[in-house]
Length: 298
Image (cartoon, rainbow, N blue to C red; front, side, top):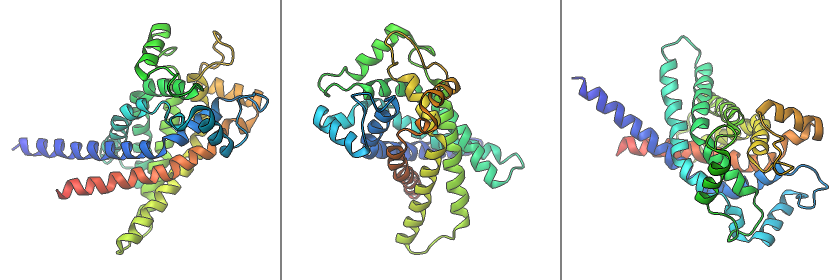
């Protein structure tokens, strides 16, 4: 008798993992160029830097002219390798935390937010080494053919700095903050608002209802968590003076950026981030929900 619930649990977990992985893979393939542009904006320190971008359009033009079309896909292998398990972890752990919180007397609104926070923190631990490699590759302004391979760059980090918090896991606290805050807002807003707005019987209008709520979820979460994202890019990216580590910890990095560059510097890269994670957030939720439903039916 105990075998049936166990089989049901494995099947349910498999659906969540496959649906979450599919959502992540599709989102990263569509939106990676905006992630490259966002990282470039976050690691540039002042307008007097000769390599700084003047605007979003200028950044696209300069990358295309200097690095070619493949310049927009620098650092894509680490997120592709990480994105499927990362998003699988994101959605699977969200469902599991939500189930666990069902045993506690919390309001549905709080349950969604706390489950989102838990899934974000778990996701951050899984993805951080891949983020260190990705940011380093994205910061490289050489042509695509001249930059080191993903595995070569990862080995270079491990050889010089090791596996720890100064090496392949540097910036972990900033990554925990970025993913924890994002998922808390993202899942909390999406499921609470979706439950408030009535389901539409027309499939097209229902799709647009979900897409609109997902778009808002991704946008609001991006605006709230971007200071953590800037801190993460500064810690994991190249330091201002080679050989000297200026950016070490999350909140100290935020304070340094604020003191030296002003409050707006903590929102660098916000436009490309919103352009990516607004529609990207909607795409992920819709791919997850429709893939999960399809797997249930088939």
